[in-house]
Length: 239
Image (tube, rainbow, N blue to C red; front, side, top):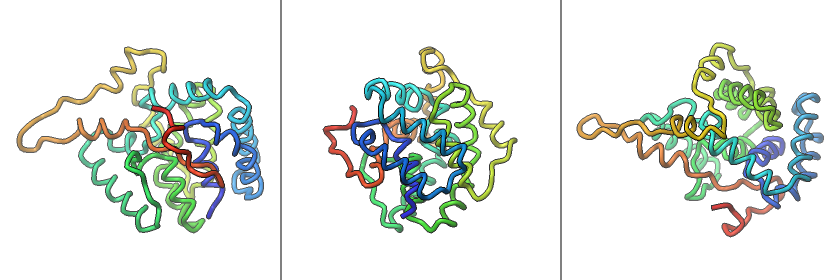
């Protein structure tokens, strides 16, 4: 298993006491593998330190404001590619099939395009294949990193690390295209509501299923364990 991918997956999950306990191991993995440039690795260590020593409720609130309430920072990759189009459903099916063929089991609460889950899958693949696969959504990582940089968020380092690992770097034009989407502040409730507003539901021939896709896309992926940490019971997960 590629432990660096597993460690990055853990850093993008909802903060828990289990994740805090695994912080030291995550740092050790990043340094032992040394796959990520030193400057970015130092930034990752800063994030790990915050996760290890910060107040858990504050860490959880920060995570929710960033990744749950802000659509432009969604960790569901297909949100940035397909939105709520019908293509998203088939893309989900195809990706889930890849996971199953690799022996990665998903819970009913998980969606295949959830970035921590995607990284856990890549951790099971040969290094070259994993880096090649990262190149495909690298422009999404670039846009997310820029938005996190604007917010001065330490999570930016995780996205920069993914770009560094990708076999091909994203094109500036592709990143710029994604950055044209609305990016409201998490405290601007009106703007957030507008960003998450469902498209009208059409009935009859040719009608899409965007409403259903949109609701499913908002279901949280189950928490992915940090390296060497068992999956927490459902009672420890947030509502």
